Image (cartoon, helix red, strand yellow):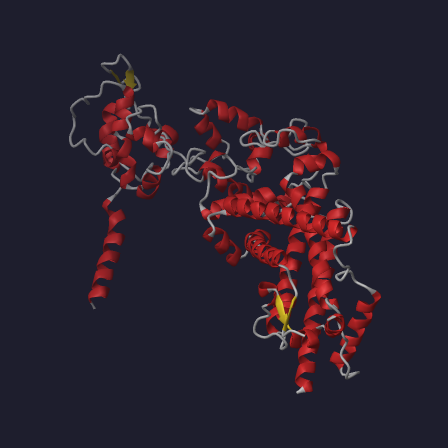
Length: 223
Length: 349
């Protein structure tokens, strides 16, 4: 077996870089709007040139993020339907068992950590968290961007509800990324200081063996 | 040492300044020897007649009675008889004495330099008001007694706005109930450094004027009004935008509704009055002034200054509560797993 394995295609790497940039931009222009009464929020808004410009950037980035998400979901669906993509990211019963096993391992109840295939339960959780979160922020964001259009079909209460949901979902996404994603991609002792896989597209065979043992075994057999 | 000497010098000057003005009762009688004649007058080149009679009793009752003598203001008169004045109109006479008040009332005089009226005076508009136009000359009495007098003073020139104000919820309470809480002209526009919508920043500052009273719980309780109006406004899209624009000095950006845009300015009514812009029957029209194409559902997006509760906005309330539970649960769970993970790494070593 070669010393490294290709894990992500160029398209996937570009997609990650784009979503990362948009996510940071959206957080930078969105969180100060949620916490506008705080001094730091005011400072960021002033620094970026005022609330009107902050909103413009947030909306532009939001529309770009919407297009990325729509393209992603559209392409994935098409690939799955035509059988050109595997269902490797779909959560299964095994993921639940893996999570249980892993937590027992962390607690010291067992000395055998769970063995993972291409995507472990943490990665699946993060992926679906992002997809679900994206659906929520996009739909509520559209209500906030086009409230007149939205209230032609929906009751007015949807608008303030969308405002609350949008801000809170955005905050939660930001916190998950700060806490969970940054830990997994940077501070996890396995990858510290920087898991470069999503940028280079490659993972070393050693790491694959250690972190995705089932996939490693499978690849070895098919060689 | 030098500092304390300078300081005591300054204090001495400050203490001495008012002493320069001592009442000069004898002055009054000297002048009144001629000026107590009710028919005393002069015809000016403009054809106008200027009465020269001064009512002793009324002057004595005035706020300056017993405090000021004639020459404290008429400083140019040094002897009797005195020369006639070279004024061609009555107004010219008034303008010439414009600065007489500043000798004592310097603070208020300086404030008038920031007034909306001052640029008019400065460019030579003879109709622009000077001190005596609002306060009177010989018979000055407290301008706010009774309080309803204030709006009548302004009404001398601003008839239209005054008539509108008189019909508003504030104006009616002032005139009919002698209410001491409601704002009159000077509470919003100020008395000497008078400002108005032409002043830079005035528009975005206007919610603060409303908040002066409408956030005071003791006062609002009397009228069964909520004090959360400001907080709920600021928490919403309009209020947040307006307050940020004001702080950033980015006025001129996206125009958003302020208190006055929905509730009116001089024509503010009770919110349940039939002609109120915010009563359910009229609110859609009010929204449509900025949001053409808005439908009934759109106006109900605004929760009418109410905090969302399970009763008045169940969906909003449900979203609020859900995230209050979900966010700590989610982040707490993830942090816990990270800590366990790290703990296991340490144990393995």
